[in-house]
Length: 162
Image (cartoon, rainbow, N blue to C red; front, side, top):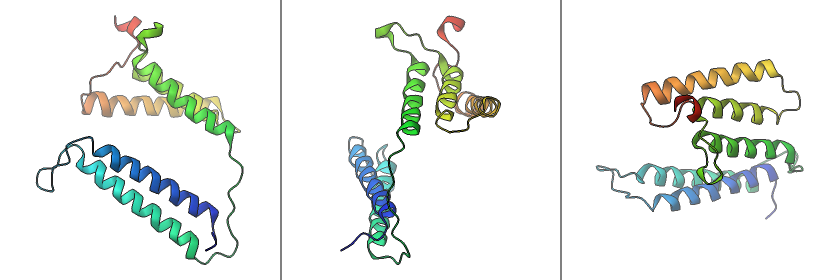
């Protein structure tokens, strides 16, 4: 059987692998049943659905009618590096790392760092546009996670709040 669309086939494969990983990870929690759902119930179902979607997309790539076979291009290493680095820096800044004496910088600083680093993955990133986006994300995250949901995590840097 020949792959008619490499892009769809490999996308489906990624969905399948991620779905299986989520479903497997959900088994570490209490699943419960439909009437009394445990914390692992929704991730398990979501993982199963994700894996099924991956299978359907991959099968469509094998059997579908495509005028030209979509080829997978080269990996864009620069944008990939910026996106991974942005998430890594976000995690470090949000909670800090006591083992290397890095204090927690809190949600607001972490969101600004995340947005600026991830935006540099674009070829034509602009400072003003990125600053506006970071501000909107910081305000929105504060309103949703701190004000509405009352989640307990550092919002401002340790050296400001004490």
